[in-house]
Amino acid sequence: MEPRTMLAARTFSVSIAREWRALYEEIWRPQIFPKWASGLSESQLLPRGDYWLAEGPEGAVRIRFTGHNEYGVMDHVVDTGSGDPVHVPLRIVQNGDGAEVMLTLFRQPGMDDERFSGDAKWVMRDLRALKAMAERKPQRD
Image 1 (tube, rainbow, N blue to C red):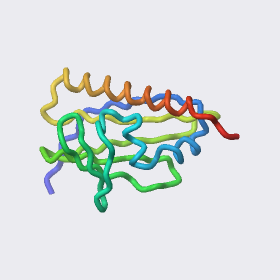
Image 2: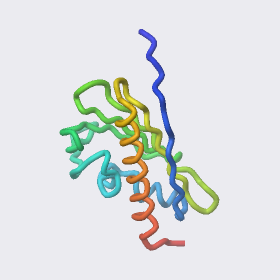
Image 3: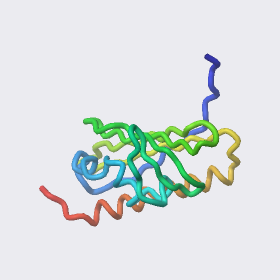
Image 4: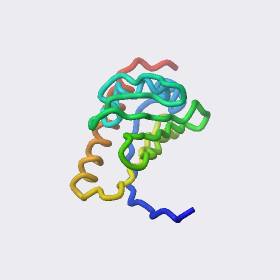
C-alpha cells in the first residue's frame, strides 16, 4: 500500500448549553443532520442499506455514519462519486455542564485557499445552526 499524503486540517468547535449525552442522543441519528448540516445535505437523507443517500450542494452523495456509541462520536464519510470519499470527524464531548461539538475539516487534494476558506465558513455556519437548534429545545433535568 502506497503512503498517503497528510492533508491540512482545521478543527472547529461550538459550545452548547446542553448536557453532552442528552445532546448526543438527540442528534446522532443521520435523519437529524439535514436540520442543521446544510453542508452535508440539501435534502432529506434516505436510508439505502449501510449508507444514506442525499442531494448535496454539488449533486447526489452517499454518506456512511458511525453507529450509535457511548463516546459522542458522530463521524461520517461522504462519497460524491468524484474522487476519494471525504472523512468528516465529528465529536461531542463534555464541557462543564454543557457540550463541546468539534468537527475537523480536511483540505482535499487540489482544493485552493478560497474553496477551503469557504468550506470553513460553511462548517461554522452549520455548527452555529446546531447550537441555535439545540439551545432552543426545552431541556429536561
